[in-house]
View 1: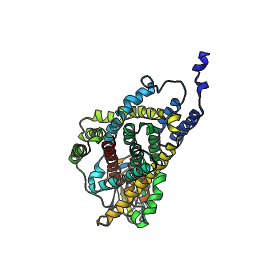
View 2: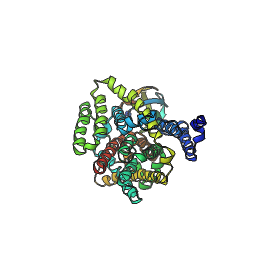
View 3: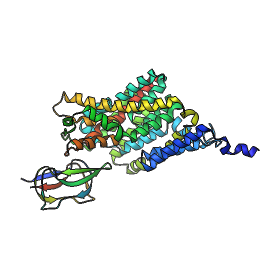
View 4: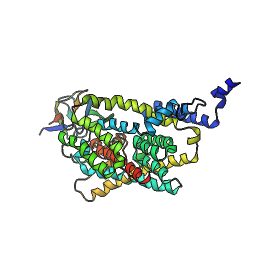
Length: 71
Length: 367
């Protein structure tokens, strides 16, 4: 069951730690956002396979923008 | 021989040398540790030049820096202009999305009032106590605005205390927050609140100005400029003005503010036991404000199913956005999936307004 990982806050993508096809456990690091001069790590909400990575380093995201999907 | 009398170096007093050390320490902290450099760097330098003898820089009516101070600070022009810039930077979305967070910003003014009474108990006059108490609001321009009117002889000390403690928020707040909360409370993930429309964000500055100024007219210089800047931003039709308010204007007045405030700190005004009390009381103000914000959040949790993470109560201490960042980090330490930053901005911003209202009330009663 595909789960969308949404941005919990607005910011800039600093780095993406996974690629499409990677297997992740719950709480694995997916990517890092920068907001208000602070780095925030986004963790996998569940275990599964990363089926899509929708952002890359440098992208600006708004709150609730989809970042990735996990199946 | 007259020439020798003009040599500054022969008129140096021991007090001045102490102030040089203080000035160089502040400059060092600003540059090397990046403690609030935008203010502490010019303040530090202002202290230095004000304590070099025979310059005439602070001679009333004539001195260069005196003129900056007199027309910018004494005439209460600069702090409102800084608020114009701050308003243009501010997005009230996080606060409007969960209006109940306003109470946390209000509660975090607790340190202001507790310190006011404590200072008075220590022998400071009411006006001096208000200027010391307002340090707990963690709001530099407001503290300067208030002290310049109520206790100008304490302005320098109060400003340096306020900005120093703002820089130290990541050190001062966490122990208090940890003491007053359980790990479960810190791990609370807050529910996403409603989306805020552009029209709401447009109406807010106008409505807020009217409500606040009708209730506390003395807060008008700061609130009106703050909300005007916010209106510029949210109208989206005056981008040139918004950009200037956010950048060029802020930077210009910050320069003049820093150097003026620093230059008021001559050895005679600063090297007194009073100042040690001010620094101690300022710290108390910060600590009590942090605690009262957190405690109100815990209290509110008793009455609501939609739990508030009490850490964001500490962000009511309106060091924007430092205090919000601190709340976010501590939340993430307790629960990896906690993203408190935007929630914490709610109390952070309402704390700014709360501090201005507190200053307005002090002015109304004590001027």
